[in-house]
Image (cartoon, rainbow, N blue to C red; front, side, top):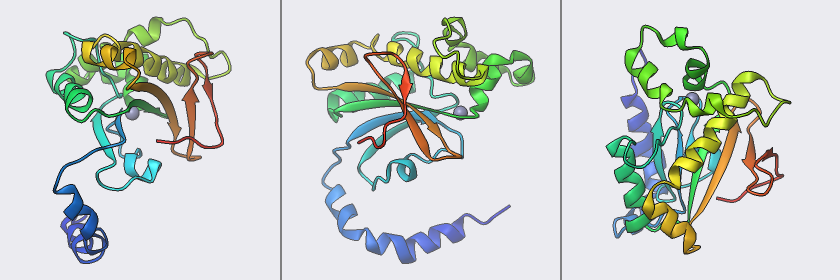
Length: 204
Ligand SMILES: [Zn+2]
């Protein structure tokens, strides 16, 4: 096992001094540019992916970037969304799924999580992603489910009154991203076509 505290020491000696003035500013409060909801997968690093600095991203992570419906969602998720939208007034929420997602693979192959009862129950909350009609015939089944889950979680976000109100008031946008960590590319869900496209660049 690697000694991660050696990393803390390097951070304190090298990185933190570079960021000292930013952290001093942030002591007065945060005004993040987005709430990013993504998977706990160690291959997904939100700040690295978006080239963001401390204070710029408010993040929810769990297996499968699952939100759930208002009233049925995990309380921690609901509270964090509420805080991001009502207290921090983030201008955008991004659901960021990723390639080779183990949680979505578990949803697709329930037998693979038979010895993991909590994982099994959790990913099953996204089973509407399996029932969605496949819009993406070009993709393999796992990629289709990953994309369908991003669409599902965006719909789930809209069941939260604070989200729906802020979207209606045009002070909040919802976005769907699919991150391919092997290529570094991010496909963005188009609200017009409901398809994932590969823009040359996208802004957070
Ligand atoms: Zn994942």
